[in-house]
Image 1: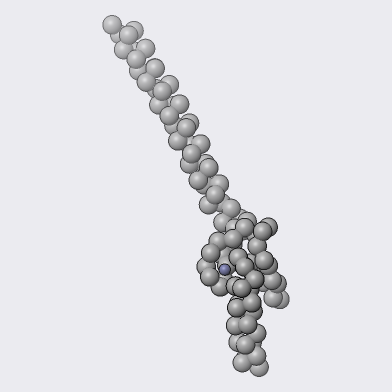
Image 2 (image 1 turned 120 degrees about the horizontal axis):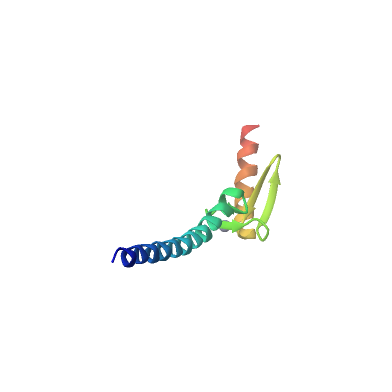
Length: 90
Ligand SMILES: [Zn+2]
């Protein structure tokens, strides 16, 4: 009888390990996505707030800062605002 219980427990533990492995994989995929934002592969469009892929975005560098936009529309709006505010400072 004891052997049977040990076998059940062992089988259950193996099953749990397998389930954990799958959960970890799903979690890893989710984390990977979030990591892209943290790593800077995905950046926020400062104009409309949408997240864009750095490689496929429209980027503009202003001094040391690089801005990424989802569209030329956003870029133009942002630049217009940027230049008008910097002119006001002078
Ligand atoms: Zn945008």
